Image (cartoon, rainbow, N blue to C red):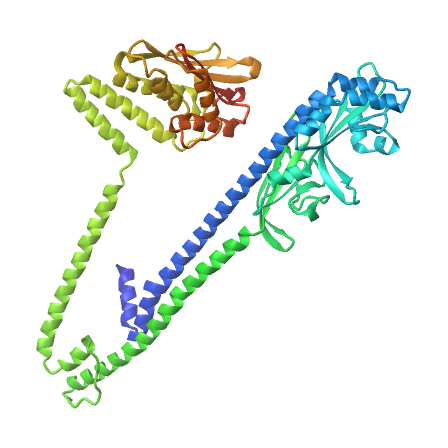
Amino acid sequence: MDREHELFGFLRRSGIRRQLYTISVLAVFLPVVLIGIFLVGNTYKLLTNYHRDLLESDNLRVRTILFEITTQAYNISEELSFDKDVIAVLRRQYSTEEQFVETVNNCTAAIDNYMYHYTEIERIDIYCDNPDIREYKQYHGVDGEISGTDWYQRATSQAGIFWQEMASFDEHGNQYWGLCLVRRIPLVFSDYNAVLVIRLSDNYLKTRINSQEYRNSVSVDEGVVFYASDREDYGRPQLIDIDYSENYFQYAGKKKIKNHTCFVKVSTLRLYQSDSRLYICTINDKSYDNIWSIIQTCLIIIMLAIVVPGILIHFFTSYFTRRVSALRHVMHQASNEDYDFKEIVRGDDELSEVFSDLEVMVQRIKEKDALMYRTMLNEQELVNEQQKMEFKMLASQINPHFLYNTLETIRMKAYTAGDREAATAIKLLGKSMRYVLENSGTAFTSLQEELSHIEIYMKIQKLRFGEKFDYAFVIGEGIDVSKCITLPLLLQPVVENAILHGLEERETGGMVTIRIVRAAERREICIEVSDNGCGMKPETLERLRADITTKNPEKKGSIGLYNINQRVKLCYGNMYGMTIDSERDRGTTITLHLPEKVYHDI
């Protein structure tokens, strides 16, 4: 109240012009500036997060592609390293070059097959220090230049594989880089050394990785860039400083690259069965400029929102104060009983009316009282409308606890009325709703809570279908479901599929079994949902298996199983997911395969 008196006291001590300017600043310019600052800051943050998320998604896409390609190359190297024909070629002694050529031609079917079927492989080279090995097809003798290279010495001195960037030259003498898998081929009971080099195709990588919006560059360990969206980046160090001492280096943020601010994401990919690491750098050099272009547009709009009203307020204030000054002068004359007014207040507003009705002061006072009363009514009406709006806002703030309490009230009324079945159904529905709402935004939950939710769902379905089916939970030995985590809301669509489709033709005697087992040989946890329903024909089973791996919008029945399969694969990798087994008239089993590493204390 004291501050309010101080404010109005300050206004009363000021002229009309100053009062109008003060009110304009407080009521118009200051809110516009504050709101503008908030909106611009929030817009910048949202746009930055949006482009950063897109950048991280593209970086993850590149990581996934590289992991897939390098893993495939490793599998090929594993087969070639222990191929009997390859080892026989390397260990054998040859008296003539023709004998060597004939032997290679008879034993290169496997290598030629890989070169023909795997477009991601550019070349396969085998180097051996057997003096009888000639330069022919994929086989190369080891001369002083090869034996002196770091990669050859490293390969012959260690048993494991490693990855390294290597420079090559095309027929025109142009240098280009590529990623190569290098490993030693074990020649048992032989004094010779052999090294396998699988070079990945740079063109294939460009086809899979290149993006019109993002620049990507990839290097291995502490080496130079072997793949880049821009040709000029090949053979150079990464544009971003990388701490190679970190086991898993990551960076996300803004960097100044070539005097240009860019969004950058750097991640590390540990290659399969190798100590080598790929450093993937994804750069967006357009987003920052686009964001600032939008911010500048917002700032221009805010400036216009300040300048245009400011100009209008300035002209109106000058016009209004001149008329008030004129009216003040003639009223001062009237107070001195000087009715010979030399100034006239023109217009059709209240000031002109005051000037016109100055001679009938009393009547004018009554009109002022009436006007004040109407103003109070309008203010009260505004207050009432504001209260109504506040009430509506409070009434709209219904949270899930209101739903739970309402369901509990209905349940108690049903229980009091003696309808225990309805009370039980409402109680189960409330528990199910609580679990769904509490886990709709979470990444993981315990398997025990997931199974409790499924049991509630089963009970609700039992109320619906009666004696049509029963259910059972089987927990494998040594599995503590309270310490095993899983994705939330993962099992309900599978169980629902078993009830609605698996037991569709059964009237009674249906059985749904949820079994949790531990597959130690594959280091995974398996969740099996089986039914004793009608099962599926082989062709129907094959179509369903295809539907859960490839999205088909026209097939609504399998979209839920497709989503579950994709959730597991996106979270844990393509080696995990869902399998379906079914036999006509014997039932169907859907198995979820999860990695054993999820089995730990929460």
